[in-house]
Amino acid sequence: MSVTRAQNARHQAVAITPKHLITPQLADCDTRLAIAQTATERSIATHIEKHFPADRLAALKTQFDKNGSVQLDHILPEKIHRQYLWEIERAFKNSGEEHHLINNETRTLRKYKKLPYDIVMRESILAQRLYQSKSLQRLASSIVGDTVTELNDEFAKDRVVAHQLSKGLSHGTHVDPKLIALVLILKGLPKSAGGGMRFFNVPPRHRPVYPEKIKAITKKYRARAKTFYLPGNSAHISLAGELPHEVLPVTGPGTRVNVTHSYGTVTSDQSEQRKAYERYVYEKEVLSTDKRAPIA
Ligand SMILES: [Fe+2]
Image (cartoon, rainbow, N blue to C red):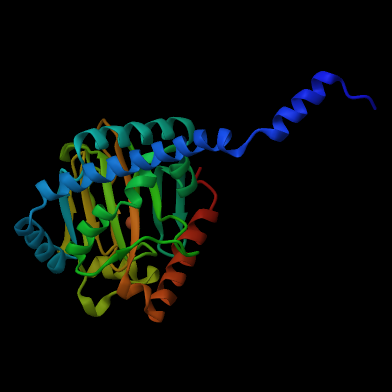
């Protein structure tokens, strides 16, 4: 087979292109990403330093220790909050699926639009940056009183997920497989529109609550439930992997949008008992629920 002179010349040009003529462009791209990541981190660090001084952190920790959860207002710099909301709403427009699921174990109903981990991470650069943000993790750690850690094990399939709830939708009572949940509310609703997050602070002797006990325990400790009506750019940090919680039905106009970042803690990650519980909850709450057919 004959090779033309033009083909030959092109082949030689590719073959002899020195590496240093290609790599600078790639390096520029990596550098730009690294600079953007650093800029986001610096902006969050500055914001947290200003809005969460030591005395406020101490007060939040006291509330968390008492209730197992606490609300954090004005969690992100405005610009980052706006961009995160924009990225997640765009992702819902492109890929959000509405789920109407029932969990046979807990008999709770889930009706929401959800973006699973791989789609959130693919569609939102800020989801990647914020989940890995050391400043946010340090903030969570100082409230929880233990070092929170990012997750990568098999029971952390949903370590970053987004939910969107509008009129008629809700998220029934459940416990999370992972111990710590940092729920970032990107778009909130007024109390009159529903969608509050109800948290059951059951006594330590009943923790963690196993899925099959949720109904009985929440009935028994209904008086200890606290409902949070969280505005946009707030967060709720909790022991979601020990305590039952739910998002009450949205009854009014508007949409609630949140992203949940799940973490372990240095202590919980080392406990065999904790791992066994997570495996159990994962099977009961995630696998069994996700397999059910939508309700007609
Ligand atoms: Fe949850």
